[in-house]
Image 1: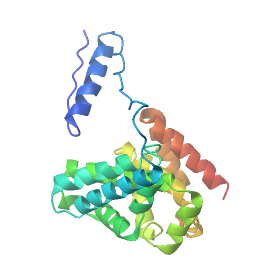
Image 2 (image 1 turned 90 degrees about the vertical axis):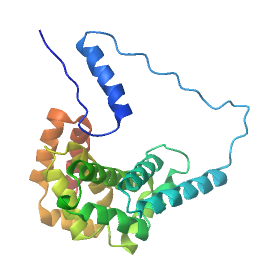
Image 3 (image 1 turned 180 degrees about the horizontal axis):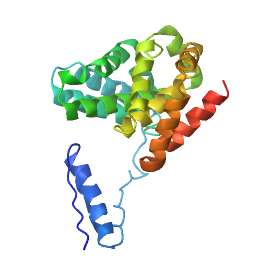
Length: 240
C-alpha cells in the first residue's frame, strides 16, 4: 500500500490546492481534470489603442513601484508579483514598456538591494520567496526588451553589470540543488546580460563552466526548464 501525502510548506494556498489535486488524482490513477474554461472578451467591445494600454501599464508599474518601497513585507511581495506578471513573455503588447520601467535605475536599485539582504535579516521562507521573485522579474524584463535597448540600458547603468550582482547570480547557480528555481532565473539573466562585453569578460574570468554544468545536472534530475536554459547558456559561452 502506498500513501501519498501533500503538504504546503510555503507559497500560495490557492496554487497549492490546484497542484495537490493534480498530484492526488494522479496517485489514484485518475485522469487529469479538464482545463477550466476561459472566457474571452467579446469581439463587439471596442479595443483599447496601444497608447492607452501603454499608459495603463505605466500606471500599474507606478503602483507596484510605490509598494516596492514599502516597509511592509506583504506589500513588497505583492509588488514583486505584480512586476513579475507585467513582465511575463506575451503578458500584453505593452510588455516592453513594463520591462523598460523595471530596468530603470531607481527600480533596479531597489530590486538589487533586495538580493543583497542577508538571509539572517529576514525570515527564511519569506527571504527565499522574495529572492526568487526578484530574479524572475529581472529575467523577464531583460528578455522582454530588444537586444539594442538592453545594450543601451547596460551601458548607461552599473547595477546589472557590477561584479557584486554577477556574483549573486553565480551563487544562485552554485546553490541550484537547494534552490533550482532561483538558478533557473539566474541562468536566464546571464543569457541576456552576455550581450554586454563587460559582463562577458567578467563571466569568462569567473570560469563558470563547472558551475553551469553542475546546475545543468540538477536540471536533468529535477528541473526541466533549468536543464534547457543552462544548456543554452553553455552554448552561448562556447561561442565566446
